[in-house]
Amino acid sequence: MSPEVAATFCYGTLAAGTLTWLLALRAHRRAFRPADLREPDLLARFEIEIDAPPSRVSERASEALRTGGLPGLGGALLTEVRPDRIAGELSMIARRGPGRKLGFEIHLRDSTAGPGAAAEVVLRRKGGEGLRIASAILVYLAAPLLLATAFFVMRAFVLPSDDPNLRAQAVQTIQIVHVLWPPFLLAHFHRRLVRVLRESLATVLRNAAF
Image (cartoon, rainbow, N blue to C red; front, side, top):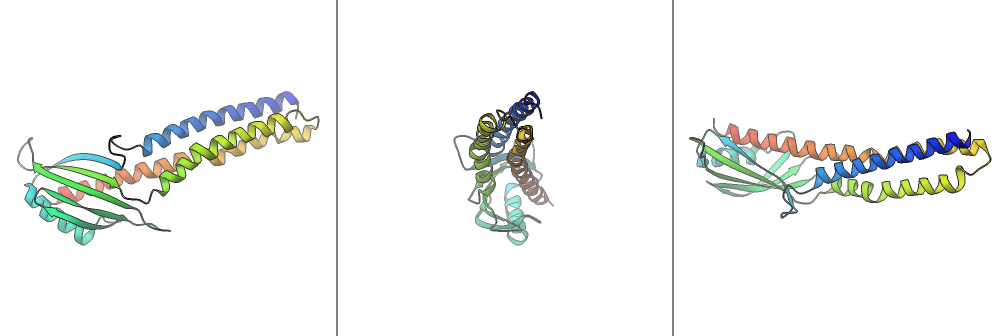
């Protein structure tokens, strides 16, 4: 491999890797930042309208959570049940290792949009932050360290070499992809978990009207 081709491939790959790292950093921050910066443990907050009075929603939804949890996701441990409030913990199912625990609060009130209830649902972190920690290690430590190391090694040893076979090792810079793609996957898993939780809790609450 000629010096020009080796340098072009090396610096081009490292530039693309740096851009990908910045995108991974953005994906990490957007996926794992609190829903409200004033509440660091806040995972999500949303409201739904239910065609039933608050007391009936509280009674039926709490019974459904107590007996069935969230189908396919895990069980629910209720810590408070009142006509205007349900609170507890969700124990998420994990195929390997410990499961993930999330706190939830459901605040019920009469709807201002018509007959029925309005429910404000709050999800909070309760530990089990493996996804966030792994993603943070990758984007804040592993990726920039690998990019800097690859640049130093290529600049100091590979590109200046008179041996074309050694210069051909510039193609090894493509290996940085192994550290750059996992943050996108972890961010996707986290966003999907939050979305599925929201949909499952909303389904439980809406079913309380029947």
